[in-house]
Image 1 (cartoon, helix red, strand yellow):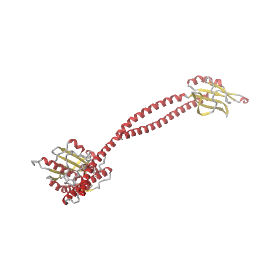
Image 2 (cartoon, one colour; image 1 turned 135 degrees about the vertical axis):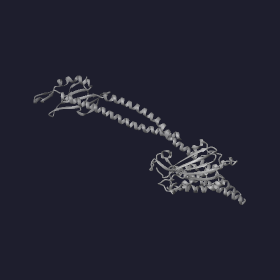
Image 3 (tube, helix red, strand yellow; image 1 turned 60 degrees about the vertical axis):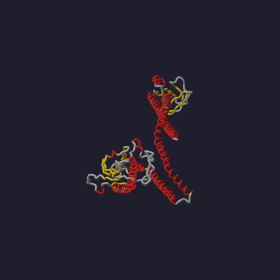
Image 4 (cartoon, one colour; image 1 turned 135 degrees about the horizontal axis):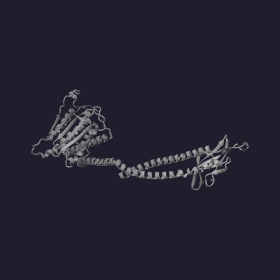
Length: 469
């Protein structure tokens, strides 16, 4: 499919370029041709003017017409010059009789007085460009002067120009075809990558939906098949169905959020958000889960130096969407609790405490250091104030080869990991970090991760105090 589309794109590039080049070459060809003809006509007119001034006029009696051109004295001295210029002259009497010519043989061409020039054929393969001028004195016609120029002076360069244009256009079309094929490949690469991502996303989503739906269907069929079963068994089946339904609801909501985020439908509703209060609220929601798993969950707020332009209650306040930011840090803290809980099985001696620490501080950073902020204007100057939140856990860590993929949708570092179903904050589908990244980017911030295997992972979220862009 992609090869066919790439081939069509390259063909369209080549066809459009070929048509444009053909139009340009055609216009250029006729422009050069008309220019050459105008130059020849100007030359012929100049010759007519020069010869007209050099005519020897004889005075005659009134009975003989008063004036007559002395042909012998007027044209004899011009023969050699005319031949050198490849311009032929013909002199006709007032009645159209040929009296003098530089041609070896008289031309069988009717006399047509034409000051603007015309092209005539006098043999099968010979053409002439001619101008015929009527010579008058006191409104009396003395004769006709016809000046001829060989037409091959036009056809020869025009023919060579046509050959050059055909060869040039052919080479350019071939180059455009090759470049079009290359550019179409470059243009198709994001589409191919998006298609592969969509294909993988669809396959993963189908897999995540298939298992709960199959389990629900199985429990429902069992309940229908054994209507007289014990109430305790039916209650357990209904609880399983309820959990799976909640899981499916969370998964569908996450998919809908990501789809809307990709299409730009989800925009933050900016308001003053005290980030310290928000983190306290999120941690309180997660504290019961942490206690159940034996994990010490704490919040550490780094007090900044006193700033004269900022009140104490506004030190950790930013412009953002409360609901989205709450979801962001709920996902990160829930993810840390889940992985720390997994690592606790390896700490049978109890020599190391299992903990998740959330750290909040106010920092100043160079705007250029935030890669996601490139291209946005900063109305507060080159240095700007940010709030930085770090979520540290003592979990199993993430291999270095997987760090660049953990924000991909449905990506799991280790297929053997099982997400706890005891918490409603964990989707268990590999979408939590993808949603976190989407929320951070919608707030013009940055999220990074550092991890050491068997030591723990640290997620760092940096958010600007004021939105910009």
